[in-house]
Length: 107
Length: 504
Image 1 (cartoon, chains in turn cyan, red):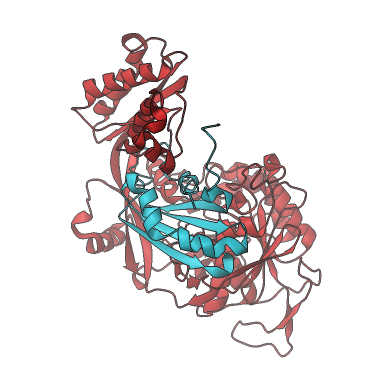
Image 2 (cartoon, chains in turn yellow, brown):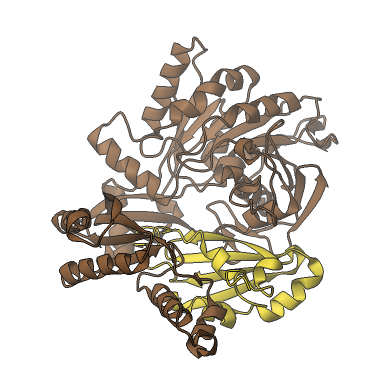
């Protein structure tokens, strides 16, 4: 078994995503590839699960906005950048890569 | 305003009957053609060979048009403020000349308005630079408008900031502050005949909304129109991010000819809706997917995207493909603008330092970890450091190294003979994508921030010293330090922050 293979249930196979940042807060859009899968994703990719997925970065709040006409969800995640673009010690101080972390969530 | 009548169609050939809105309504209805706005930069440091295909496409399509360069990320402006203090002739976008030299003559000749925040901390100096360039190129002297009113570093600005930030306002460490100004002055400058509009800090979508407001003669309270065109501006303002940049993912989201990715053009209609396309004969792609990703980029509440001009609502927005590389955005609504403007305030944040060194081959991970332990033991009592073991984690990790530590635990567990039965290993495997085999090539990275430069310099020396005093086979040590700015933001009554423009 190829242990590096991503789970077949990873969100990555069903949606695409992009991170934007403002200060110490990011938003991650999650957009369903297929409209018929959107409702299932809305049921499964909840604020609670996203908060757990990013728990190691200690976000203080996760807010989800649902955009049915775009088959998209927008997650706003507060205080997840270890200080944000001006204070983070991370190479990726904007958190641009974090959409791909969310896409590893299993659905 | 005098609406230019050109009967050469843009993408959308239906012309819309309309009246001018200069206050006096013309006797005859005037045919208003839609306006094209192209974008040729999404940040300071973007590609400088992308503007020419955009301008050539605008000219070919024959409609009234503008080209924008968005050059100011949050920190870029503060860095230019610092530059200006050491040289009063600088402080504008360093790539200004490279950006506009290839297109300046064409834009002036064909009436393509140039709008940009490349004025940064010194829009007057940027305007002078453009006039000098035009002279060098034997072009007519362009009419350039300079928009100001964003800089809060003067006495009036400082007292406003003190009032708003209270004890958080540290005058000793204060570097600069700028308010996000809106579109009105850009529009008025164009109506006053400006061929080029140079601004400092304006909200990014304003670079687009300004020329569109001027074109259609929109008033400040036509909220749905302003919101629609602002979201067109939002789609344009990051350049290639709507044409396949920051998007391509081989096998999942394929984009053709990424090496020649074309920059976007929006055709914006009189109702504020738009069609996004891109420069002709370029790579990249405009699709429903690229547009959706960029539409939500840096948006928090989709029902209230706040700009200086309007509160845009994209809750019911729709994105539809209307042709190859043509995507229409409709259904954006607008709500009245807020009574405040946002200001970003920058303070001296001390120094940032980082160092890296690589270990490869047998036992590389153990040697990299030994190097990390050496740094921690020698410096850990003096200041906080962040460590990454690049090869295991380089960017998903957190400053507290929780992810890295769990990855290491998992690796240790999986290399144990009873790994399959190890609950801990299984638990971590489900949550995070981490390496499953012990990597043979690891680059240790350490970073820290401190007000005292000598502390950061000590860190950098310690990394370099790992060459001779650290584990075997350490190679490629590199260190780097830079000044840091910390930020704060606040909202200020817009009536206290008038913007203005002058034509020079």
